[in-house]
Length: 627
Image (cartoon, rainbow, N blue to C red; front, side):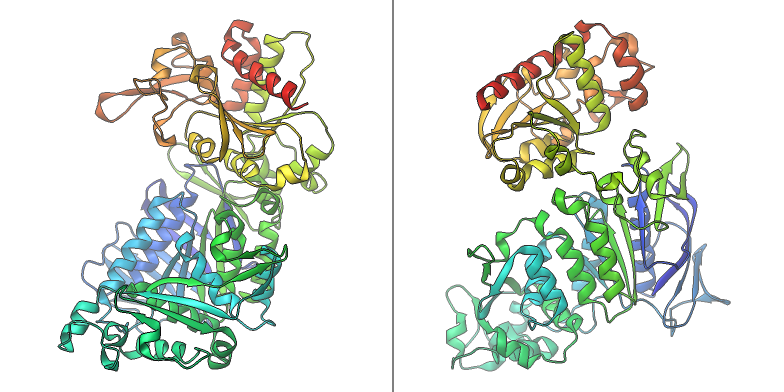
């Protein structure tokens, strides 16, 4: 399945928007800064395919016209929705898709940043659940949204496959798994349909000796699948051994060897969709597979962080559905990725699709220069919003990275090999990491203004973006690979507050926001800091409540590094007032970050940099302690 073109009349900032695919690759990457429109494209595609999937159903509305063409199984249908009428190829005013080939599944992976995407998926799932009759789905779910709540199910399905399965081998290598246990524990909870299903049987609850009531009255393919699963219990058992009346739940120990024998020959997608039916019905509570890591430690799927799982998620999705025609939408799948994996992430995705996804078209969005550094040429589309409309252009890897990094990275294939890891290996002194390149420039200027002629005892290094910075300090590898190396992470006091707040602390070291909230992390040579809050009332209100404490959420915090230089006379040039709900207003930076950091900031006198002084004093004090 390959998309060929899509036209969108108007969806958010996509106006008379046309996108053509050249068909040369089955993965296309869309990059752009936040607000550029790349996520809007994904939202619009979800709406288009949802609308087509639900043709003829009540309440199936869509707020924009569209035209869509794709290739599937040797056919090239063109579908247009215009002024409330459907055209398929030359057939005007159609009411249904009829025999028009259509993707078997639309798979949507979302990392959690885009609540609209997750909301669209949830809305579809709610409607689908409403069409499930009793305890037996009468149709397969076309739209499958896969978020962090699918972590255990995805991995469990693959880990219980035979040892020669390539996806299982990939996961073992990626997560450092040496072996799995003998059984998978499946826990089922009482679903919403239980009351009506049992009532139809004229029963109040499950009876051990009345098979009709087992699994709360589930029937059809659901009952057949559950019967297949319990046939994989190793030892003799009766119903009372797996069902607890007091807890009203099932705990079924599925022997993995027997499972492999029972389901030999089943496509992976069918196995997954059977488990997914249990999830949609509200029956699936937990799947637990005991693991032994290569380190010798006992663990389970829950042992791993979401960041560790990120590329494994993608592999799982594509591998599970490789036998079906699918459109796969990956909405910023690299958002929480382990920094060492971010550079190799797209290479892994290309390897996956080359090997397993010939029937799928993968669309991926990203705003990480780190990820793009390893993509293939020719598959990158660059989103830019010019104030009135979205402009979409094909971009080289170098152009995309230069755009995402504010124009300050001159990129070549040789330089692509450079990473944070290599920077650290080439130096020995303490390191202050900033979110981005312009932050790095401003901090270096601040040091020279406040300490003229004094050599800086630490280096300043940008980490591409706040997500990369958070991930860098959230993992143990940084401390393991560079033991005793003093490192600092400096976050803006804006939405990055959530990233700073999410880093696990050993202790708080600075609790005065005016000096920059700072904490020592679990690795005692690592520290995380927030920008100091200047003693300017209007800016103070943007990050602190009346008691002087942070508002508590990044969405309520509005202090970027540029705002440390705010003055009333700069309104209308570098800053502006923005009205907020409830009659309030915010001061926000509106200029060009690069020009501001390169030309404006260096012209200021040292007094303008005083907010940075306590920050530098803190860094120097910790460098002395840890030397």
